[in-house]
Length: 451
Image (cartoon, rainbow, N blue to C red; front, side):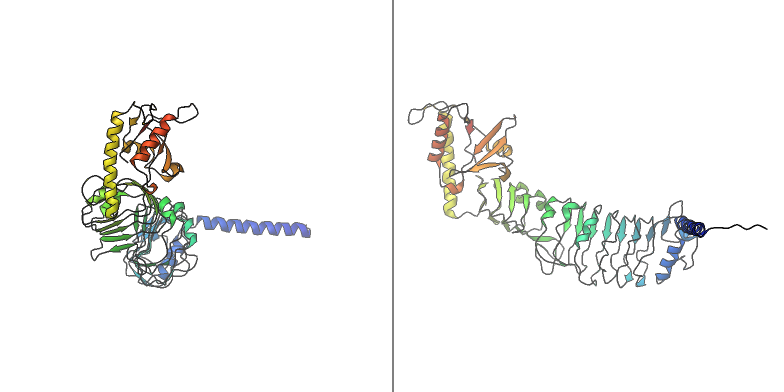
């Protein structure tokens, strides 16, 4: 009778290989598993047990109510909305490697939100009106595939703040956390997110608005009714009556969409870095009482508002009062009179240039031909005199670069109200530049007396 002999090293290698083979087989078994075990664990944690569900591991889970599977029996959706569920869930939600939709909203669940870090393809998550605590790391454990997160209507949550790890949810387009005892300041992370809808109203937010709001994709932003914060105020019918966004480091132009807030009475946008014109659509706000846009970099002609509107526009050197009767500025009477005097000077200046396009100066110097230019076209060419187009600034006023509609590049020197200069200085400036004719110097193309 023969014996097979193995050396110690050979036997050790054989055993290691066998263990690896067993582990590999077990791993493959896990990959082949369906979701029956996870469904049984979830069912055991729910009270009352949803109709047709079972706590026993069963291959029929795809036939249970409120469950949707694919052809391979992978659970894709679990919809337990308003199923009168109560109690708390385990700290770790069972693994569902293909789950895309989870809806636990409108129940009576309490305790902490469970960790959902074993739902790698979750896209829509509904947790409204449930739970009393958000555990640390909850947002970190959410799938980066998540597109919609509904957490609103949980007023009994312990005070919490939006954590910086929220930035990992780069595909999130809608986030609702209204009435959730949310506090602290809003993190400055929204330029990195795909969010278009953000609802954080009825909370305890504090601090300033994050600058990244201006660079975000957000179209629907709801921040009203903060207990310690007054950016947005509503009436009993949930209509916005007051917006206070002063000193918020806002940039860009004023959105005409403010005119859609028909109940708006107070709009404070002062002390920011806003540019461009005051939207003409604002005159349609029939309930408007105060519009404060002072201390910005606004430009263009001020729309004519009803006399009942208190309009505060000081600190915007490039804004131009309208010649139409009505309320166009908060300038004191002396300044308004000065503006009227300037209009009369403009008219006399217009007459002067219309009769002296190829004349001589008072000193007998021949002037080159001057074209009277339209202010609106100049404003468009200068991007409404945006600060980024400013080349410099002198005693007469700022100088801007730009391009006319025909593509010609130009520079525009604009008289500043703060300069204290008027018609005589304007005429001298035009005459002085007209004398300068050299191939290395700019040529005077024309002037504008409307702005």
